[in-house]
Length: 269
Image (tube, rainbow, N blue to C red; front, side, top):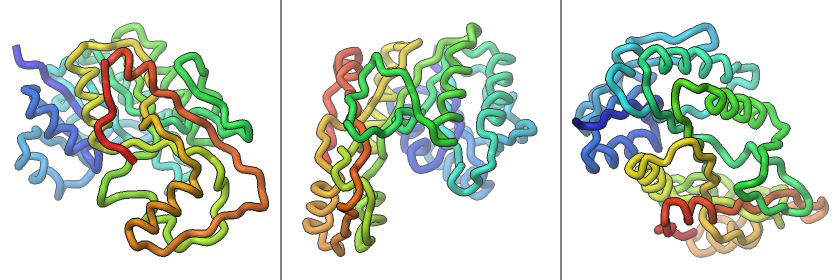
């Protein structure tokens, strides 16, 4: 029987992920909050649904969206930059109840390495490091991770990605020309979007559940070194950095993911 996957959040990462999974033989349902995107989803073979998460409940035909699926991929960023008062935990609580109601066995949650606190000693974050972030976003992501892992009605694998990029969407374009950027000596923790998709597909293909995996490219030059070189190479205006304050950061170790998935990162920095 064909394995069916529901992806909540078919945006910049979710849409090409859906296309990748379809190319691997999976049937995919995908959600969007934009009616205009439904035709786009249909064009690439995704059964599209207009679903919105809210702290008060869910809107849209979420029952049909989840019905018959073997796996749910939760790919919804907290959105706290736009709305710092947003209760993302409550949004996901409602969605988890909907997953339970459909008896779906497996959930993959796309989280972030921001669940780990930055530190002036640049600690190495490995598979044994417990999330300890103190920002509002980090606290909400940690609460959601715990909520999913505590549920016994389905298996959960969490993948914590670092900063996502591709050729068209790279953080250097945002930093180019900016002045007095903080934490110049902090190690970078980036991952190409294509590696993200390949890692998720590998977890799904190999039925790797009840795991927490950190996923960043295994090279960590300093922010100042990397972005200065990138901007110079790509003819972008160079940024300047605040060297008067001590940098804080961390080094994300993805070796456990590489070992379990037998994975080699394909896209460098």
